[in-house]
Image 1 (cartoon, rainbow, N blue to C red):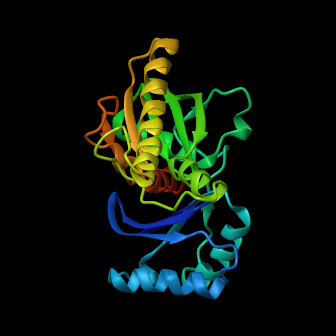
Image 2 (cartoon, rainbow, N blue to C red):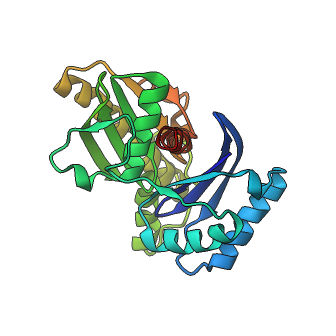
Amino acid sequence: MILVADMGNTNIKLGVYDCDRLMATARLKTKVTKTPDEFEQDVISILCKNKINAEDIKAIAISTVVPETTKVFLEGVRKLIPVKPLIVGNDTKTGIKISTDVPAELGIDRLVNAAAAFHDYGGPLLVIDFGTATTYDVITEKGEFLGGVIAPGIRSCAEALWEKTAKLPKIAIEKPDKVMGTNTVSSMKAGIFYSCLGQLEYFVRHLKKELGIDFKVIATGGLSDLFVGNTNVMDIFDSNLTLKGLNYISMINNH
């Protein structure tokens, strides 16, 4: 079995795979104040809840954009699972060729998503990850990562409204019944949802036109399901794409 962890700015998503079968998954908040013992207890709880023995886990694979939190996480996990972790980097074998101007700058979460999407669905692809930022990444039919777009995430846009504006309340992020709001909350919901939907449809349409590629569009990330049934520009929703990528990368680097 393999323990995989996607360490993001807002959340840590964990999974346990037995070959290609996802046995357990959990989401934790990324807290810089957490101790190794607290992370150890989190993992123990996840394993116990899913009736998984720690000694059955023979590998750990991690993608991270928060190195300090990752260091603390690994201090706790190593007490429970004493194996050398694979921390995915731009020089790790992934099945993807990075063809951007500065390959070392590519976010590891974007590389892992590209590896999973290309392995599972083939190319050409546009992978959209609705996370703290919303990223749009283009992968060719030969598995080349060409580049993409980094835009403000849905939650980041919403938080800017209620944190930077004294009289606007914190609201649920969801599709409203109509575009025009008739009160503060419905107006905010419309502004958040439809501005992000418009961004999504604009980028997909113009990337296809600019590149001359009719790619499949794969969506992932915590808020990707917000758009299910509300647009026809996305082909596949895969909520576990990053975890799949970590599992795949671990397997090809350990065999």
